[in-house]
Image 1 (tube, rainbow over the protein chains, first blue to last red):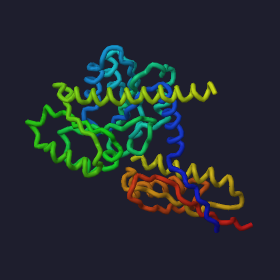
Image 2 (image 1 turned 30 degrees about the vertical axis):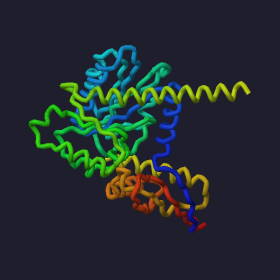
Image 3 (image 1 turned 60 degrees about the horizontal axis):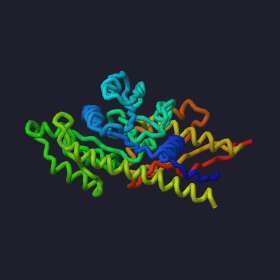
Image 4 (image 1 turned 90 degrees about the vertical axis):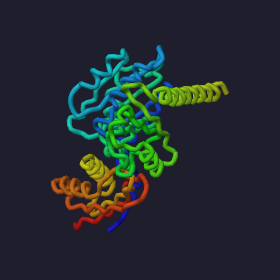
Amino acid sequence: MIEVPIEKKVLSENQRVAEGLRTSLAETGTLSLNFIGSPGAGKTAFLERTLASLPARTQVAVLTGDLQTENDAQRLARYGYPVRQITTVGACHLDARMVEKHLEGWDPAGLDLLFIENVGNLVCPTSYDLGEDAKVVVLSVCEGEDKPLKYPGIFRKAELMILNKVDLLPYVPFKPDLAREYARRIHPEIEIVETSAITGVGFDRWLEWLNVRAARKKASMREAAHAFAGTGSR
Amino acid sequence: MHEMGIAASILDAVQKEMDRYPGYRAAKIGVRIGEYAGVDTMSLRFCFDAIVKDSPLAPLELAVEWLDGEELDLGSLELEEIAA
């Protein structure tokens, strides 16, 4: 009997593809965000309002994942930006290869933002790196405040929590303070923005977050390009 | 629900590794799973057993080590010499 250490990630193949995506998006300075939330958390409506609110000349592309139908892509395509539907035909999450495949033929140069709307699910998408810069978890006030405690994985990995549908707060027993407390118990540094895709409340803060992150991504691309030019001239 | 894919990834990794050890068969594969990895161990075992059963790797034992982070890593692989 011999024992050999393997010491690699179970999803090392997914990881390899994700790192490839991350490298190419770093070269173009494209900020990529992976939106994860339950079915019905309002991810698509949130992205629709975001697309409608982006400053003119923003270059953005959207991938949206569902088990079946092109419905979300049709909704998102109304804003004039390139949108592609990924139908997983049963799979409960997107993986890096699906993203890679659906980016084919799109010129990433000049693309400021890539939004990836994952399949509605708080569990499985957590395990699959899509080469994104950050995961954004979308939780709606129609759900329980204790979702962060019940599904800690995604709340731990997400850098930003969108607390969505706050226009419904007068009609539901949801306690936002409690949801914030639970989310911070799981992930003390998580940023939280309360939004409503119907009234637009909170979108100024969200767009500010997006702006800061996109600018940071562009800046690191320029730094990398400078460093490269520096080594080349020596 | 994605445990089937994870089980298949584990088997693929074992199969690849076995190509390097002619004359041996895989007996046990270790995986380390963190509390925040989003993987259900019971479901993973169920899927793993279901697909190992009909694979050339059967019988293969899955040894799960439970950790408290986000790990989803392969550990060590135990090999047995195939009797000549």
